[in-house]
Length: 360
Image (cartoon, rainbow, N blue to C red; front, side):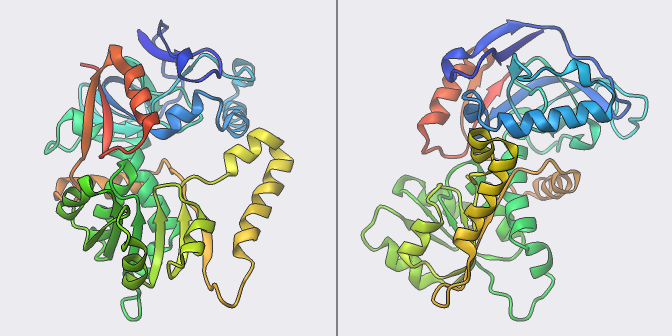
């Protein structure tokens, strides 16, 4: 089969279209999926520079030890195939898989420590694969799950909406999504509206109408001189979800009133890469404490949100897509042979939704 791979951590210039062996099923709960479409996510671009390699190698070795395949994992696990979410067709399955059928159209995600789906085929745990909702196309299906699970885990788990929404009385339902026009932002807005939250979001002027159509209650053009005043007046917020990598110091400096700030670009993996596992974890603790030591005038906390490969989260997104409470937002579709162009475009930023690779 063909796969886009990196053979070293030298950035996008190292992406190569390689002929490799089709992966085989080794776990009875795995499925082999023929990929029809996959999306490109910021983690893919970051991993071309070795981002997260320290923790991911630890996770790979722990998993290989659990399955008795320790000797099959090398230190760098190169060459590496990237790509985290996909749509496709089940072509083979382990003997414990009964929920999915051969030939069934599916969508799913690949954990970041595994070989990815920017390839003709991928092997993945069947718990992370569902039948594709038939009210969306294979292209649209490939655009949702990685960004959607990132938004879901950040808001539902990290942000505590899993229990807060059960307490109707006294809940501050106002959430600020900073940078709402990208892949995670567009899905976060729709998730929040499905949970009956009041959503304020920021973007540039060309994306205002799009975010209004997605259901945002207030859309603020961050380039306007009045933007900070509008954001402050719309508060206080129970949660600020930062999809624009502004950082907690920036939000506090601006004086946006809030209870919980959630960053999606935590320093966790970077600290581990730079300092090693033990010192890196100590640095992560120091970074969290730096922003969470109580201060009388700033009664707020900082948390880190992450992509979580969760069957529960996939089921939530599946139901919302079927009910048309979530609609995919796609900026551009690239043919498989032009995948490096999609990586380059993602690196430029300022996207309106997702970039998808068509592999049919």
